Amino acid sequence: MYLKLWNALITLQHDPFPAVASLANTVIQYVRSKLKNFGREPSEQRVESAPGTPVNKPMFIVVWDVERSHRVTHWTNNNGGSSCISSLAVLNPGTSHTCVATGCDDGSVRVWQGVFQEQTSSSSPQETAPSLLTSYQASTDVNPATRRILYLR
Image (cartoon, rainbow, N blue to C red; front, side, top):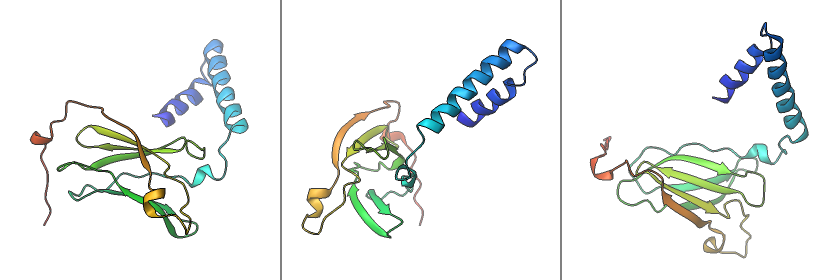
């Protein structure tokens, strides 16, 4: 969506009406200045998220440090029944308040804190496991009893 909006602004920059072209140019210059002045730090660019696999098994979330080739942490999403993680997003990447949000196909959302804390050799996995910050039912339209689940054998 953002790419379509950006392309529309670029097109409007060459509009035959001077007021429209000027406004589009002003918006483009503003966005470019913000990106230049407040660009991402190199550490923030290492954060990526991807959707979980659609498998009806207990769901674990795993955080990897790809540069050092080791697992930072992992934990279960505590999905009930046949619920599966359908989306995952990193919130506030590169800050001290970085969280991970997971969305499940039953409409539930969970937000986890303490995800990117490094595990020291003296700490146990329970001490460094992320903690649940909040959870809520984002959509009540989804009824798990009526969902069709595909089992692959």
